[in-house]
Image 1 (cartoon, helix red, strand yellow):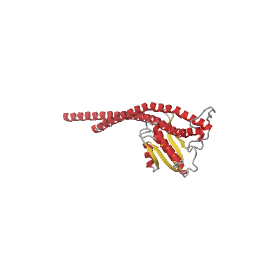
Image 2 (cartoon, rainbow, N blue to C red; image 1 turned 180 degrees about the vertical axis):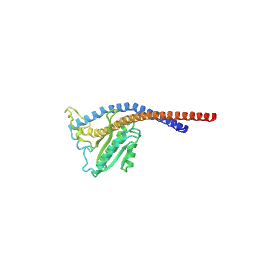
Image 3 (tube, one colour; image 1 turned 60 degrees about the vertical axis):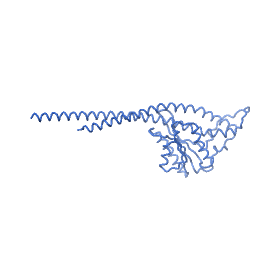
Image 4 (cartoon, helix red, strand yellow; image 1 turned 120 degrees about the horizontal axis):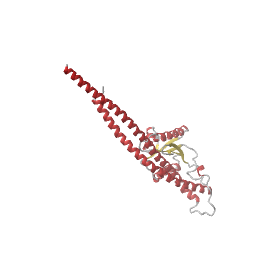
Length: 293
């Protein structure tokens, strides 16, 4: 039968689980409060993305942009870069696992095709994952995945664009998590460089009465790098919203599981307490009978 020692151990476990439950509940509430801000940031960035894409398409319809170094594919693709957007912290369910496995599949596919692969890691999770597997990492950025800013995207974009222009890499993929809703997030991979010229098709040429200063080619020279930076920024924003949504669900599940464990331990503790009381009563009755006899 359970003794007093086991009853004390059960009570300690109940207190421990309750403390953990308070932490997971607090993390759930924090993640829930940040989801709305992250979703608003995603929605606020979309008008800029749509407008810059429209302007580039219309300018491209008026002139030739295929010679731009960020649009022109390299003759041979020997080395491929993968920009992986992950988080700095865990406890976010399958958020990091899904995007890292998606990036890993791209890396395996490129290596099978005889190409070298290098990783640009955004977040400690991506850095740790690929370093553990011996993957070459060109650069790592931390402290930006939770609350990304546009200047962070500019830094990442400049790094990969410089490497592409100088021939250190011949193709760049962007692996991130697409935020569909608070319940649905899907890992995705898009080609970042060279910019797919088909994405810039379908524009309407500006009428002849429009005068440009500087010339359209000079404007495109400035806008196409901004377009690449915007795509990186969009991936960061989508990833941040997905991270908070995944963490909220994970922490809610942990809180619910803690409640179930507390209920089970409480029932077990009650049984142990009742068994201890029964044992004490039996000992008292037995002792009284022995004295009377």
